[in-house]
Image (cartoon, rainbow, N blue to C red; front, top):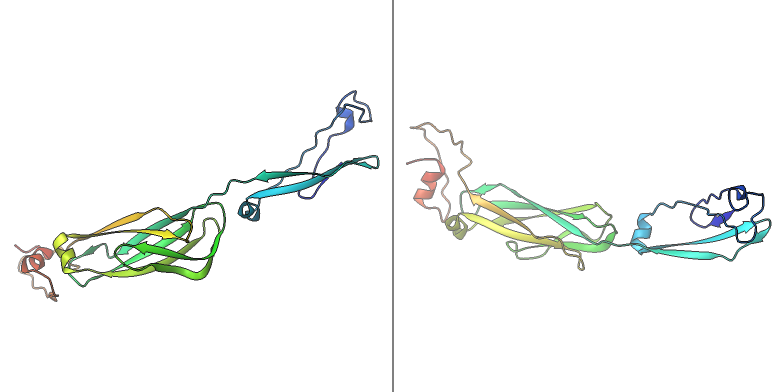
Length: 214
């Protein structure tokens, strides 16, 4: 028999080896097996060690230990969405929603996860300052951006963002929001009367184009 501190071990009968008698003779050997399922704690530790002892007829072997080194992967994946997907004036608010995912195989934290977005200007805290993310775990946050006169002239707003836990940095995601039409239905019939609230920075031709006017 083999006693292992982590697994249940199965040994074949000694009648299956060597001269096939009931004794484990000199120079004969049996190979025993056991299966261990790794845990998240093992991955977090980076290795797993077990200790085993063999015995037969009241005799015991010396204890032997084996350490298996586990490959750790620390990774973050960031996704970002915007609402609305188009703007048609200055001073319009665009809300960005961020989802940080632990895409590695080890637990991250406790730590403050943050997002850096070049249009927001300050680091965004996602979750608490002692957030723990297991593999495939997520934490979310959001921020708003107000369009400017320059955005109207440019015709689009592009920003890029990445997430970090202080040691691991995510991919960089880019979002482009285009200047679009007004939220007023686009199927207006000739002769229709509409009302538009003018905001600072709008040009007459921009307003006209929003509603499909010539």
